[in-house]
Length: 467
Image (cartoon, helix red, strand yellow):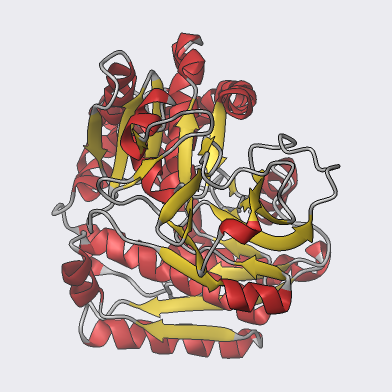
Protein backbone atom coordinates (compact mmCIF):
# COMPACT_ATOMS: atom_id res chain seq x y z
CA UNK A 1 0.00 0.00 0.00
CA UNK A 2 2.68 2.52 1.02
CA UNK A 3 4.82 1.68 -2.02
CA UNK A 4 1.84 2.13 -4.33
CA UNK A 5 1.01 5.54 -2.86
CA UNK A 6 4.57 6.86 -2.77
CA UNK A 7 5.12 5.81 -6.41
CA UNK A 8 1.90 7.62 -7.36
CA UNK A 9 3.04 10.73 -5.48
CA UNK A 10 6.38 10.71 -7.31
CA UNK A 11 4.83 9.95 -10.70
CA UNK A 12 2.68 13.08 -10.46
CA UNK A 13 5.26 15.27 -8.66
CA UNK A 14 2.78 15.94 -5.84
CA UNK A 15 5.15 16.60 -2.98
CA UNK A 16 8.56 18.24 -2.75
CA UNK A 17 11.17 17.94 -0.03
CA UNK A 18 10.16 20.13 2.95
CA UNK A 19 6.52 20.66 1.96
CA UNK A 20 3.93 21.48 4.62
CA UNK A 21 0.91 19.30 3.83
CA UNK A 22 -2.56 20.00 5.21
CA UNK A 23 -4.81 16.92 5.11
CA UNK A 24 -8.54 17.43 4.55
CA UNK A 25 -9.70 15.21 7.41
CA UNK A 26 -13.37 14.23 7.73
CA UNK A 27 -12.71 11.22 9.96
CA UNK A 28 -14.13 8.77 7.39
CA UNK A 29 -12.18 5.75 6.07
CA UNK A 30 -10.66 7.56 3.07
CA UNK A 31 -9.27 10.55 4.97
CA UNK A 32 -8.16 8.38 7.91
CA UNK A 33 -6.24 6.15 5.51
CA UNK A 34 -4.71 9.19 3.79
CA UNK A 35 -3.58 10.82 7.04
CA UNK A 36 -2.14 7.56 8.37
CA UNK A 37 -0.26 6.76 5.12
CA UNK A 38 1.27 10.25 4.95
CA UNK A 39 2.12 10.11 8.65
CA UNK A 40 3.95 6.79 8.16
CA UNK A 41 5.84 8.22 5.16
CA UNK A 42 6.51 11.70 6.60
CA UNK A 43 10.21 11.09 7.23
CA UNK A 44 10.84 9.44 3.86
CA UNK A 45 9.10 12.34 2.11
CA UNK A 46 10.55 14.92 4.54
CA UNK A 47 7.22 16.66 5.06
CA UNK A 48 5.34 18.17 8.00
CA UNK A 49 1.64 17.49 8.44
CA UNK A 50 -1.49 19.19 9.72
CA UNK A 51 -5.19 18.34 9.47
CA UNK A 52 -8.29 20.46 8.76
CA UNK A 53 -11.81 19.41 9.69
CA UNK A 54 -15.07 21.25 8.95
CA UNK A 55 -18.05 20.20 11.07
CA UNK A 56 -21.03 20.68 8.72
CA UNK A 57 -23.55 20.37 11.57
CA UNK A 58 -25.69 18.12 9.37
CA UNK A 59 -25.77 14.85 11.31
CA UNK A 60 -26.68 15.82 14.88
CA UNK A 61 -24.53 14.21 17.57
CA UNK A 62 -22.62 12.22 14.93
CA UNK A 63 -21.13 15.47 13.60
CA UNK A 64 -19.66 16.31 17.02
CA UNK A 65 -18.42 12.74 17.51
CA UNK A 66 -16.65 13.00 14.14
CA UNK A 67 -15.00 16.22 15.30
CA UNK A 68 -13.90 14.63 18.59
CA UNK A 69 -12.49 11.58 16.75
CA UNK A 70 -10.48 13.85 14.43
CA UNK A 71 -9.01 15.84 17.33
CA UNK A 72 -8.03 12.69 19.25
CA UNK A 73 -6.35 11.07 16.25
CA UNK A 74 -4.34 14.22 15.51
CA UNK A 75 -3.33 14.45 19.17
CA UNK A 76 -2.13 10.82 19.05
CA UNK A 77 -0.03 11.62 15.98
CA UNK A 78 1.22 14.86 17.48
CA UNK A 79 0.16 16.97 14.51
CA UNK A 80 -1.77 20.28 14.57
CA UNK A 81 -5.52 19.99 14.07
CA UNK A 82 -7.66 22.88 12.78
CA UNK A 83 -11.43 22.63 13.16
CA UNK A 84 -14.34 24.85 12.19
CA UNK A 85 -18.11 24.56 12.58
CA UNK A 86 -20.33 25.80 9.75
CA UNK A 87 -24.12 25.62 9.54
CA UNK A 88 -24.18 24.28 5.97
CA UNK A 89 -27.99 24.19 5.66
CA UNK A 90 -28.27 27.89 6.56
CA UNK A 91 -25.35 28.75 4.26
CA UNK A 92 -26.94 26.86 1.35
CA UNK A 93 -30.30 28.58 1.90
CA UNK A 94 -28.72 32.02 2.19
CA UNK A 95 -26.69 31.61 -1.02
CA UNK A 96 -29.35 29.70 -2.95
CA UNK A 97 -27.05 26.74 -3.63
CA UNK A 98 -27.10 23.02 -2.81
CA UNK A 99 -25.85 21.72 0.53
CA UNK A 100 -23.11 19.84 -1.33
CA UNK A 101 -21.92 23.05 -3.02
CA UNK A 102 -22.12 24.99 0.26
CA UNK A 103 -20.07 22.31 2.03
CA UNK A 104 -17.41 22.42 -0.65
CA UNK A 105 -17.27 26.22 -0.47
CA UNK A 106 -16.92 26.10 3.33
CA UNK A 107 -14.15 23.49 3.22
CA UNK A 108 -12.04 25.15 0.55
CA UNK A 109 -12.52 28.55 2.18
CA UNK A 110 -11.23 27.06 5.46
CA UNK A 111 -8.27 25.43 3.71
CA UNK A 112 -7.28 28.79 2.22
CA UNK A 113 -7.54 30.48 5.63
CA UNK A 114 -5.18 27.92 7.15
CA UNK A 115 -2.74 28.12 4.23
CA UNK A 116 -2.42 31.89 4.70
CA UNK A 117 -2.13 31.81 8.48
CA UNK A 118 -0.04 28.68 9.01
CA UNK A 119 2.17 28.49 5.90
CA UNK A 120 0.97 25.17 4.46
CA UNK A 121 1.68 24.88 0.73
CA UNK A 122 -0.18 21.64 -0.14
CA UNK A 123 -3.67 20.36 0.66
CA UNK A 124 -4.10 16.58 0.46
CA UNK A 125 -7.61 15.35 -0.36
CA UNK A 126 -8.73 11.73 0.03
CA UNK A 127 -10.36 10.94 -3.30
CA UNK A 128 -9.79 7.32 -4.28
CA UNK A 129 -9.98 5.15 -7.40
CA UNK A 130 -13.67 4.35 -6.81
CA UNK A 131 -14.47 8.06 -6.53
CA UNK A 132 -12.74 8.49 -9.89
CA UNK A 133 -14.77 5.70 -11.49
CA UNK A 134 -18.05 7.08 -10.10
CA UNK A 135 -17.23 10.58 -11.31
CA UNK A 136 -16.50 9.39 -14.85
CA UNK A 137 -19.69 7.31 -15.06
CA UNK A 138 -21.81 10.23 -13.84
CA UNK A 139 -20.21 12.56 -16.40
CA UNK A 140 -20.67 10.03 -19.21
CA UNK A 141 -24.38 9.85 -18.38
CA UNK A 142 -24.59 13.66 -18.62
CA UNK A 143 -22.81 13.64 -22.00
CA UNK A 144 -19.28 14.75 -21.19
CA UNK A 145 -16.34 15.59 -23.47
CA UNK A 146 -12.70 14.62 -23.17
CA UNK A 147 -12.14 16.94 -20.17
CA UNK A 148 -14.96 15.19 -18.32
CA UNK A 149 -13.32 11.82 -18.98
CA UNK A 150 -10.20 13.05 -17.19
CA UNK A 151 -12.31 12.98 -14.04
CA UNK A 152 -10.54 13.97 -10.83
CA UNK A 153 -7.04 15.26 -11.55
CA UNK A 154 -4.23 13.99 -9.26
CA UNK A 155 -2.87 17.56 -8.86
CA UNK A 156 -4.69 20.89 -9.20
CA UNK A 157 -3.00 24.30 -9.23
CA UNK A 158 0.11 22.69 -7.71
CA UNK A 159 -1.64 22.98 -4.32
CA UNK A 160 -4.42 20.39 -4.11
CA UNK A 161 -3.11 16.82 -4.29
CA UNK A 162 -4.80 13.41 -4.19
CA UNK A 163 -2.20 10.86 -3.09
CA UNK A 164 -4.61 7.88 -2.76
CA UNK A 165 -6.43 8.35 -6.08
CA UNK A 166 -4.63 5.15 -7.15
CA UNK A 167 -6.13 3.09 -4.28
CA UNK A 168 -9.52 1.35 -4.39
CA UNK A 169 -12.10 1.66 -1.63
CA UNK A 170 -11.66 -2.02 -0.80
CA UNK A 171 -7.91 -1.51 -0.29
CA UNK A 172 -8.63 1.50 1.96
CA UNK A 173 -11.08 -0.45 4.12
CA UNK A 174 -8.61 -3.34 4.47
CA UNK A 175 -5.84 -0.89 5.39
CA UNK A 176 -7.97 0.67 8.12
CA UNK A 177 -8.82 -2.75 9.57
CA UNK A 178 -5.22 -4.01 9.50
CA UNK A 179 -3.97 -0.85 11.23
CA UNK A 180 -6.85 -0.79 13.76
CA UNK A 181 -7.83 2.77 12.80
CA UNK A 182 -11.61 2.48 13.41
CA UNK A 183 -12.72 5.38 11.17
CA UNK A 184 -16.07 7.11 11.50
CA UNK A 185 -18.84 5.88 9.16
CA UNK A 186 -21.35 8.25 7.56
CA UNK A 187 -24.45 6.05 7.25
CA UNK A 188 -25.93 8.25 4.49
CA UNK A 189 -23.20 6.91 2.17
CA UNK A 190 -24.80 3.48 2.49
CA UNK A 191 -28.25 4.64 1.31
CA UNK A 192 -29.27 4.95 -2.35
CA UNK A 193 -30.72 8.43 -1.86
CA UNK A 194 -28.29 10.44 -3.99
CA UNK A 195 -27.22 9.91 -7.62
CA UNK A 196 -23.62 9.21 -6.65
CA UNK A 197 -24.71 6.69 -4.03
CA UNK A 198 -26.80 4.88 -6.65
CA UNK A 199 -23.80 4.69 -8.96
CA UNK A 200 -21.65 3.43 -6.07
CA UNK A 201 -24.11 0.95 -4.55
CA UNK A 202 -26.03 -0.24 -7.61
CA UNK A 203 -24.47 0.59 -10.98
CA UNK A 204 -20.82 -0.33 -10.36
CA UNK A 205 -21.68 -3.66 -8.62
CA UNK A 206 -24.04 -4.48 -11.53
CA UNK A 207 -21.30 -3.79 -14.12
CA UNK A 208 -18.81 -5.83 -12.07
CA UNK A 209 -21.16 -8.81 -11.86
CA UNK A 210 -22.37 -8.73 -15.47
CA UNK A 211 -19.76 -7.08 -17.67
CA UNK A 212 -16.33 -6.29 -16.23
CA UNK A 213 -15.14 -7.21 -12.75
CA UNK A 214 -12.27 -4.70 -13.15
CA UNK A 215 -14.51 -1.76 -14.12
CA UNK A 216 -12.98 0.56 -11.49
CA UNK A 217 -9.45 -0.05 -12.80
CA UNK A 218 -10.66 0.27 -16.42
CA UNK A 219 -12.31 3.64 -15.79
CA UNK A 220 -9.23 4.90 -14.00
CA UNK A 221 -7.11 3.84 -16.97
CA UNK A 222 -9.51 5.72 -19.27
CA UNK A 223 -9.08 8.84 -17.11
CA UNK A 224 -5.30 8.57 -17.30
CA UNK A 225 -5.31 8.24 -21.11
CA UNK A 226 -7.78 11.11 -21.52
CA UNK A 227 -5.60 13.28 -19.30
CA UNK A 228 -2.63 12.93 -21.69
CA UNK A 229 -4.67 14.18 -24.66
CA UNK A 230 -6.43 16.86 -22.62
CA UNK A 231 -3.16 18.34 -21.36
CA UNK A 232 -1.86 18.69 -24.92
CA UNK A 233 -5.04 20.43 -26.13
CA UNK A 234 -5.08 22.65 -23.02
CA UNK A 235 -1.54 23.82 -23.72
CA UNK A 236 -2.41 24.63 -27.33
CA UNK A 237 -5.57 26.51 -26.28
CA UNK A 238 -3.57 28.51 -23.73
CA UNK A 239 -1.36 29.80 -26.55
CA UNK A 240 -4.51 30.83 -28.44
CA UNK A 241 -5.87 32.53 -25.30
CA UNK A 242 -2.84 34.79 -25.00
CA UNK A 243 -3.02 35.53 -28.73
CA UNK A 244 -6.72 36.41 -28.97
CA UNK A 245 -7.90 37.44 -25.48
CA UNK A 246 -7.36 40.71 -23.65
CA UNK A 247 -7.79 40.81 -19.87
CA UNK A 248 -9.14 44.15 -18.67
CA UNK A 249 -10.01 44.60 -14.96
CA UNK A 250 -12.33 41.65 -14.48
CA UNK A 251 -13.46 41.68 -18.10
CA UNK A 252 -12.30 39.56 -21.03
CA UNK A 253 -12.40 40.70 -24.65
CA UNK A 254 -12.21 37.76 -27.07
CA UNK A 255 -11.12 38.94 -30.50
CA UNK A 256 -13.47 37.87 -33.29
CA UNK A 257 -10.55 36.14 -35.06
CA UNK A 258 -10.51 33.55 -32.26
CA UNK A 259 -13.77 32.13 -33.59
CA UNK A 260 -11.96 30.84 -36.68
CA UNK A 261 -9.71 28.44 -34.74
CA UNK A 262 -10.48 24.75 -34.22
CA UNK A 263 -13.51 24.13 -32.02
CA UNK A 264 -11.50 22.02 -29.55
CA UNK A 265 -9.25 25.02 -28.87
CA UNK A 266 -12.02 27.62 -29.01
CA UNK A 267 -14.21 25.94 -26.39
CA UNK A 268 -11.27 25.78 -23.97
CA UNK A 269 -10.34 29.39 -24.72
CA UNK A 270 -13.89 30.45 -23.81
CA UNK A 271 -13.86 28.36 -20.65
CA UNK A 272 -10.56 29.96 -19.58
CA UNK A 273 -12.09 33.39 -20.25
CA UNK A 274 -15.06 32.57 -18.05
CA UNK A 275 -12.71 31.40 -15.29
CA UNK A 276 -10.76 34.69 -15.45
CA UNK A 277 -13.96 36.70 -14.93
CA UNK A 278 -15.78 34.56 -12.35
CA UNK A 279 -12.91 32.67 -10.67
CA UNK A 280 -14.70 29.35 -11.27
CA UNK A 281 -16.44 27.33 -13.96
CA UNK A 282 -19.00 25.63 -11.68
CA UNK A 283 -22.53 25.66 -13.13
CA UNK A 284 -21.16 26.16 -16.64
CA UNK A 285 -21.94 23.46 -19.18
CA UNK A 286 -20.95 23.00 -22.81
CA UNK A 287 -24.29 24.44 -23.91
CA UNK A 288 -23.24 27.76 -22.36
CA UNK A 289 -19.98 27.67 -24.33
CA UNK A 290 -21.90 27.04 -27.56
CA UNK A 291 -24.35 29.83 -26.66
CA UNK A 292 -21.37 32.21 -26.66
CA UNK A 293 -20.18 30.87 -30.04
CA UNK A 294 -23.69 31.36 -31.44
CA UNK A 295 -23.82 34.88 -29.95
CA UNK A 296 -20.66 35.82 -31.84
CA UNK A 297 -22.34 34.95 -35.14
CA UNK A 298 -25.23 37.31 -34.37
CA UNK A 299 -25.69 41.07 -34.29
CA UNK A 300 -23.52 43.55 -32.41
CA UNK A 301 -24.98 44.78 -29.12
CA UNK A 302 -26.77 41.52 -28.36
CA UNK A 303 -25.95 39.91 -24.99
CA UNK A 304 -26.81 36.76 -23.04
CA UNK A 305 -26.93 36.08 -19.31
CA UNK A 306 -24.90 33.11 -18.07
CA UNK A 307 -24.55 31.31 -14.71
CA UNK A 308 -22.68 32.90 -11.78
CA UNK A 309 -23.87 36.43 -12.74
CA UNK A 310 -21.80 36.46 -15.94
CA UNK A 311 -22.89 38.29 -19.09
CA UNK A 312 -21.49 37.88 -22.62
CA UNK A 313 -21.96 40.61 -25.21
CA UNK A 314 -21.31 40.76 -28.95
CA UNK A 315 -19.38 43.95 -29.68
CA UNK A 316 -18.83 44.23 -33.42
CA UNK A 317 -17.89 40.54 -33.57
CA UNK A 318 -15.66 40.58 -30.49
CA UNK A 319 -17.12 38.89 -27.40
CA UNK A 320 -16.99 40.74 -24.07
CA UNK A 321 -17.37 38.54 -20.98
CA UNK A 322 -17.91 40.35 -17.67
CA UNK A 323 -19.85 40.31 -14.40
CA UNK A 324 -23.48 41.38 -14.74
CA UNK A 325 -24.16 44.85 -13.34
CA UNK A 326 -27.48 45.00 -11.48
CA UNK A 327 -27.42 48.59 -10.25
CA UNK A 328 -27.61 50.20 -13.70
CA UNK A 329 -25.53 53.27 -14.47
CA UNK A 330 -23.31 54.30 -11.54
CA UNK A 331 -22.14 57.89 -11.41
CA UNK A 332 -18.41 58.33 -10.65
CA UNK A 333 -16.80 61.74 -10.16
CA UNK A 334 -13.45 63.11 -8.93
CA UNK A 335 -12.99 66.88 -8.48
CA UNK A 336 -9.70 68.83 -8.16
CA UNK A 337 -9.83 72.57 -7.60
CA UNK A 338 -7.48 74.75 -9.65
CA UNK A 339 -6.31 76.40 -6.43
CA UNK A 340 -5.31 72.99 -5.00
CA UNK A 341 -3.40 72.13 -8.18
CA UNK A 342 -1.65 75.54 -8.16
CA UNK A 343 -0.26 74.70 -4.72
CA UNK A 344 0.82 71.14 -5.54
CA UNK A 345 1.71 71.41 -9.25
CA UNK A 346 1.42 67.57 -9.40
CA UNK A 347 -1.64 65.51 -8.41
CA UNK A 348 -1.79 61.68 -8.42
CA UNK A 349 -5.32 60.29 -8.51
CA UNK A 350 -6.57 56.77 -7.81
CA UNK A 351 -9.74 56.58 -9.94
CA UNK A 352 -11.70 53.72 -8.34
CA UNK A 353 -14.53 52.57 -10.60
CA UNK A 354 -12.81 53.67 -13.80
CA UNK A 355 -10.33 51.82 -15.98
CA UNK A 356 -7.39 54.12 -15.24
CA UNK A 357 -5.51 56.17 -12.67
CA UNK A 358 -4.36 59.71 -13.50
CA UNK A 359 -1.49 62.14 -12.96
CA UNK A 360 -2.04 65.92 -13.38
CA UNK A 361 0.95 68.24 -13.74
CA UNK A 362 1.23 71.98 -14.48
CA UNK A 363 4.14 73.08 -16.72
CA UNK A 364 5.31 76.19 -18.51
CA UNK A 365 5.00 76.12 -22.30
CA UNK A 366 8.45 75.83 -23.89
CA UNK A 367 7.11 74.91 -27.35
CA UNK A 368 9.08 71.63 -27.24
CA UNK A 369 6.28 69.34 -26.11
CA UNK A 370 5.08 66.68 -28.55
CA UNK A 371 1.33 67.21 -28.28
CA UNK A 372 0.54 63.89 -29.97
CA UNK A 373 2.96 61.62 -28.11
CA UNK A 374 0.29 59.25 -26.73
CA UNK A 375 -3.46 58.62 -26.71
CA UNK A 376 -3.27 58.55 -22.89
CA UNK A 377 -1.21 61.74 -22.41
CA UNK A 378 -2.73 65.06 -23.47
CA UNK A 379 -1.93 68.77 -22.98
CA UNK A 380 -4.34 71.66 -22.37
CA UNK A 381 -4.20 75.44 -21.96
CA UNK A 382 -4.21 75.69 -18.18
CA UNK A 383 -5.07 79.39 -18.09
CA UNK A 384 -8.43 78.76 -19.82
CA UNK A 385 -9.58 76.68 -16.83
CA UNK A 386 -11.46 78.85 -14.33
CA UNK A 387 -12.15 76.83 -11.18
CA UNK A 388 -11.95 73.06 -11.28
CA UNK A 389 -10.95 69.88 -13.10
CA UNK A 390 -13.47 67.04 -12.99
CA UNK A 391 -12.81 63.43 -13.99
CA UNK A 392 -16.01 61.41 -14.27
CA UNK A 393 -17.85 58.84 -16.33
CA UNK A 394 -20.53 59.62 -18.90
CA UNK A 395 -23.94 61.15 -18.29
CA UNK A 396 -27.02 61.25 -20.51
CA UNK A 397 -26.79 64.05 -23.06
CA UNK A 398 -23.02 64.57 -22.76
CA UNK A 399 -21.49 66.47 -25.71
CA UNK A 400 -18.02 67.61 -26.75
CA UNK A 401 -16.68 70.05 -29.34
CA UNK A 402 -14.05 67.80 -30.98
CA UNK A 403 -10.72 69.26 -32.05
CA UNK A 404 -11.01 70.83 -35.51
CA UNK A 405 -14.83 70.88 -35.55
CA UNK A 406 -17.11 73.90 -35.29
CA UNK A 407 -20.08 72.10 -33.75
CA UNK A 408 -20.57 69.59 -30.93
CA UNK A 409 -21.04 65.83 -31.02
CA UNK A 410 -22.74 63.47 -28.58
CA UNK A 411 -20.45 61.28 -26.49
CA UNK A 412 -22.76 58.35 -27.20
CA UNK A 413 -22.21 58.76 -30.97
CA UNK A 414 -18.43 58.90 -30.50
CA UNK A 415 -18.55 55.63 -28.54
CA UNK A 416 -20.61 54.03 -31.33
CA UNK A 417 -18.28 55.36 -34.06
CA UNK A 418 -15.27 53.92 -32.21
CA UNK A 419 -17.02 50.60 -31.49
CA UNK A 420 -16.64 50.90 -27.72
CA UNK A 421 -18.48 47.96 -26.05
CA UNK A 422 -21.57 48.90 -24.03
CA UNK A 423 -20.26 47.39 -20.81
CA UNK A 424 -17.02 49.43 -20.98
CA UNK A 425 -18.54 52.85 -21.71
CA UNK A 426 -19.19 53.67 -18.05
CA UNK A 427 -15.53 52.97 -17.22
CA UNK A 428 -13.97 55.40 -19.75
CA UNK A 429 -12.98 58.66 -18.03
CA UNK A 430 -14.18 62.04 -19.25
CA UNK A 431 -12.04 65.03 -18.30
CA UNK A 432 -14.05 68.22 -17.76
CA UNK A 433 -12.82 71.75 -17.13
CA UNK A 434 -15.54 73.55 -15.21
CA UNK A 435 -18.71 72.57 -17.16
CA UNK A 436 -17.06 71.66 -20.49
CA UNK A 437 -15.90 68.17 -21.52
CA UNK A 438 -12.30 68.54 -22.69
CA UNK A 439 -11.24 64.92 -23.29
CA UNK A 440 -12.78 61.52 -23.82
CA UNK A 441 -9.75 59.54 -22.71
CA UNK A 442 -8.22 57.54 -25.53
CA UNK A 443 -10.66 58.90 -28.11
CA UNK A 444 -11.22 62.67 -28.58
CA UNK A 445 -10.09 66.01 -27.13
CA UNK A 446 -11.97 69.30 -27.21
CA UNK A 447 -11.16 72.25 -29.43
CA UNK A 448 -11.92 74.63 -26.54
CA UNK A 449 -8.77 74.05 -24.47
CA UNK A 450 -6.18 73.29 -27.15
CA UNK A 451 -2.60 74.47 -26.73
CA UNK A 452 -1.43 77.13 -29.20
CA UNK A 453 1.57 79.48 -29.60
CA UNK A 454 0.03 81.94 -27.12
CA UNK A 455 -0.39 79.34 -24.34
CA UNK A 456 1.75 80.20 -21.30
CA UNK A 457 0.92 77.39 -18.86
CA UNK A 458 0.12 73.82 -19.82
CA UNK A 459 -1.80 71.16 -17.91
CA UNK A 460 -0.43 67.71 -18.73
CA UNK A 461 -2.83 64.86 -17.86
CA UNK A 462 -1.53 61.30 -18.05
CA UNK A 463 -3.76 58.23 -17.63
CA UNK A 464 -2.32 54.88 -16.59
CA UNK A 465 -4.38 51.81 -17.47
CA UNK A 466 -4.69 49.46 -14.50
CA UNK A 467 -3.88 45.78 -15.01
